[in-house]
Length: 129
Image (cartoon, rainbow, N blue to C red):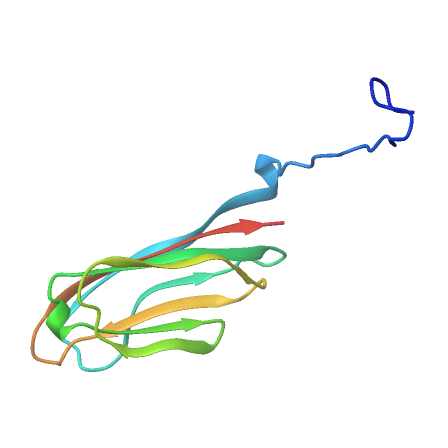
């Protein structure tokens, strides 16, 4: 019989486990590309630390000339988006996409090869034990 409850109820014990600060750390990276280049050039890369699991939260791409900016995003070897021409700064939300240790998130960009573009990319994530 549970204390303060009717005789026909059972006691249920609930254990709440909360992640400790040492169990997780910031992940992701920020980078910049400022060239007139017609070939793919790395803007930013995040490699999940060995013995940890990565959680990809979002990717943000900002450009000074969206008309000439072409983007490719590769997640753990799979091209997620290719030849994308973003029209404005908007976050791409992944929530908690889980990535194994050693997985790579790569953002690349290029212009038309004539016009110089200034592109910033931010990968937001965390790593947990």
